[in-house]
Image 1 (cartoon, helix red, strand yellow):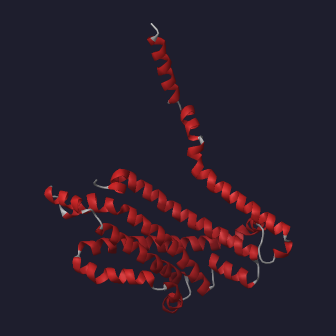
Image 2 (tube, rainbow, N blue to C red):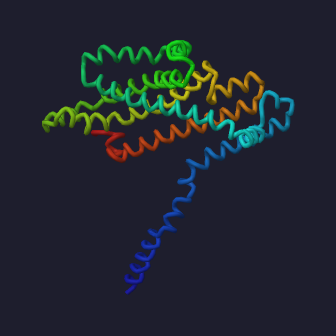
Amino acid sequence: MTILPFAADSSVAAAAAGTPAARAGRWLRWPALRPVLLPLSFAAAWLGAWQWGVDRFPQTRSLLASPSEIGAILGENMPLLFPHLASTARETVMGFALAAVIGMLLGAAITQSRRLEQALFPHLVLFQIVPKIALAPLFVIWFGVGSESRLIFALFLSFFPIAAATAGGLARTKPEALRLCAALTASSWRTFISVRVPFAIPSIFAGLKMGMTMALIGTIVGEFVTGQQGLGYIIMFAAASADSALTFAALALLCVVGLAVYGAVVVAETVAQRWYGAPFVTEGFN
């Protein structure tokens, strides 16, 4: 006689636990918010300490602007800074996108041909350690001082980590997975799409994240050299004028560009993992 009320209460509790309000309550718990709150708390504490230090030692203002001064500069000059922000973002995104397509295609081609791998892969590794930033003046000589030289230099810097990571990831497919495909008489294309690519996804996206960073660096270095437009030009102009507030304002906008592109890569990685299945991508065959 006492079982039925208990069962009814359990069903009511289970139904209540599945309501949107209950799911929202679970999301608002500390473990779910911790990845967001901890970085924000650290950033707030760091900015607060920075502001306090500048206010406490005002003689440092000529060298280190306070966060409030940087925010004021951004608010007052955003209409003037926005074209430079758009220029840097456009060249970074275009250079990175072209490098991603070309790098992944070349990385895939290298793994499909043993001779091509032996001929090109050592050069990809070699170019990883060459100080490529020192080549920026040559790109200005070859392609001029316009946006084309900056875009091509961003492509050049980000291409090599993407190609090397793609080739390395595709080459590290587990042999037992390839033997299984051979036993099932799967075609080379089917094996590549269904086995090699899923195993290589972590490596490919690691290369894309590194390539994104290099594309932004390439764009800024190009703007340093050409000195016509972009956030790199603003940084050089502000540094020459000893304007630390404007320098930090341009750096803050650079962070926005970098975080936006990096976030897009992370979203693409999440979509790829869901498409292929996260357990298979991260663990493969056990």
